[in-house]
Structure formats: C-alpha cells, structure tokens
Length: 165
Image (cartoon, rainbow, N blue to C red; front, side):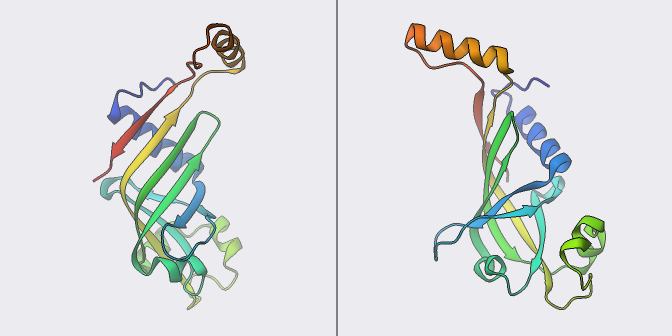
C-alpha cells in the first residue's frame, strides 16, 4: 500500500488502520518521574480520537497517568513508525471493558473483568508524527548505494505531522 506523506488524511487513515490491525505499541507518561514505556494493546476509537488500554489500577502507569498526564504511544511496523502524543487518564469504564474484553486480554488478567484492580486507561490523542517507508530490500540497497555515491541522503519515504483534535 502506497501512502503519500503529503496527504495528511491518507496518512491518518493508514495510521489508524495499522493500529487497529496490529494493536501493540509502547505507552508511557512523559515528564515527571522517569519511567520506561511499556508494551500495551491498543483499542482505538477513531471517531473521538481515543485509544484505550487495559491495566491494573495500582500499576506504575495507571498511577502516573492520574487524570490526564502528558503521554506518548509509540507504534512501529516494518514500514510505518509513529509517535502519538496526548493526555493519558485512568478512566475506568465498564462498558468499554465489556466491549474490548477478549481471550487475549483475559490471559493477562486471570481474575477476569470483575477484578477490582482492573481499570482502563484512555489516551486522548492530540497529535502524531508518522514516518512511512515503502521501500523493499532492493530499493533500500539501491538508495543506500546511490546516497553514498552522490553524498546525499537516501530517499526511502517521508514523514507527516498530524493534528488529531
């Protein structure tokens, strides 16, 4: 699939499509106490620019999120990389727990949906930086060779900044 990085709508559609298909990325709070980003499964709601995640209330991430900490969700595949910024909140929502609960989620939370420690985090997305490279191995080799011969950087794709409000 070719995506023109100058077409912001196409980049946004591609980003959401890939997140819905692959779901896993790294989530973390920025600023405040330093902590590592954590692998999380994303449940995207395109219509309102929200991404939801299951976690325990007493996890470092839930405590750091509080009621709206600046946060980032980093998503990467072979040909697309993105960093989505927004505000992360502990937003316990039983309806969404029911909506997104599945056997994979259940494997991580053995006490089930009714575990009093279980909650959901909501990332209210503000913006994203997205990089897309659709060059296969042959094009990559060609661009690297050409760049070294001409003393220019390789042309392997582009990037776009998205306002997600």
